[in-house]
Image (cartoon, rainbow, N blue to C red; front, top):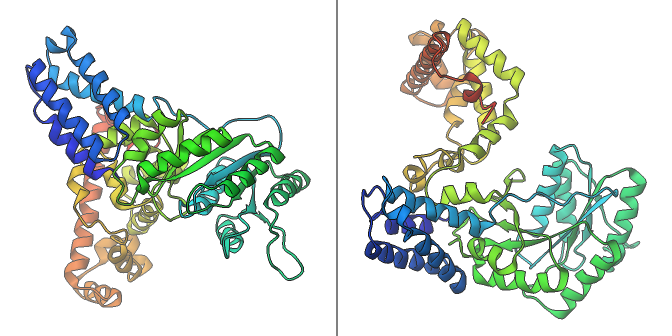
Length: 451
């Protein structure tokens, strides 16, 4: 995400990054390049102008110009202003004492609204909530069926009203109102209402979604923004906010060819926080939006906090302690290795994960990092007998040939896997030895247990 903007900002900051001395002249030149980079990313003109003016004013402060590392200070100013531009702080969903909590989802057609509804349901379910999805998008063909299919995938119920002929009820307000009653009757604590979208903002669309708002009085109204549409998305958000007084924005399709203009402009223009970001079609590709983490990624600093949080979802403390014991006793085998691969795969896109690690973002940007990178390793391990997986030292020449043939690969692939496995065990043994000596090596952090 934001690859082009990141590259242009990096190029603009090269003249000052790491400099022992900066001047008013190269500050002015750098800020011209930064403004150009923002405008090329389709950032609102006024937003870009105010951003660069604020940075320039702070950069010309005597404390920056005469500091020990003025170049780094200047980059820090850019980072701080990016964080401010993106919203400054993370804002959670509104909390309400009434049950069920009602969340109204609005947006234009094609913005990823229905998919987001299912993603949000999955997210809330992981937090112990019991959501019900209301199928109030009653015009788009198969919209109700799509929502029901997605809801089934995340294990939550859908409320829809159909006539005797099976055709969905066309009264969206009634669907929303009855869904809230159904949630109350069945003990569901959250209702997420999927509303109809149009190809553009129109009077009929707005009238209906306002009528739904008045009927159910939602605790949260989220506007879904297609990040690939740039300033058009910002203009739509402004109109929806005027009509609905939205509580927050959701950026979708951040994994696509997005220039970043919507993300960088919308907070300033609409004055409402970005609450979630969606980075793929999979139903687990949803993250809470943190301005500081996004700013770090835009500036190529990685996002190690999000990486660790994703690891936490797959590695609980007891499992990590058990894994540590296996490494200490040298009983970690290929079955354990296979299990860890499955957990890593569940953390999300490999390229996205690598991009979160400081220093690796630019290295993997142009690489073809496939999500099926572990397929060959899995095939080889599955081709082994239980005894071979638990005691890899048993694998001799003839066994290697059999394993390779069973996996449809070459003996060299088996050799490479065993070498990688030995190197990993050796590295972990060294980590254990350093830990015993009292060095600053935290196994909990290595297993993704803490920040």
